[in-house]
Image 1 (cartoon, helix red, strand yellow):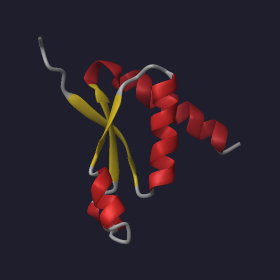
Image 2 (cartoon, helix red, strand yellow):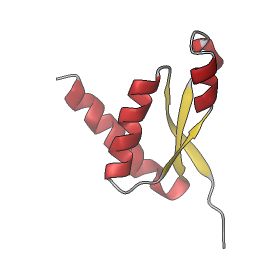
Image 3 (tube, one colour):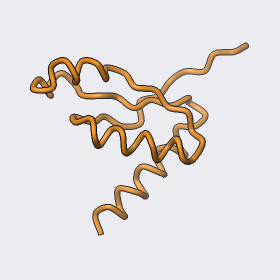
Length: 77
């Protein structure tokens, strides 16, 4: 089995925004992963630490970015 590289498609400095984005990708059947999620939970006041990184497999990255950009545009309307 060939392991696929994970790509960071977005970074969030608060958990609710991260959870919303992750649920949007889950709804599109794109498996996603959180990097540094616990760091924000433990020391949320240290947002300069880089936030929660939302990662997907390299083969899903373009679709994931498109979904997140599209839903961000809708949210801003």
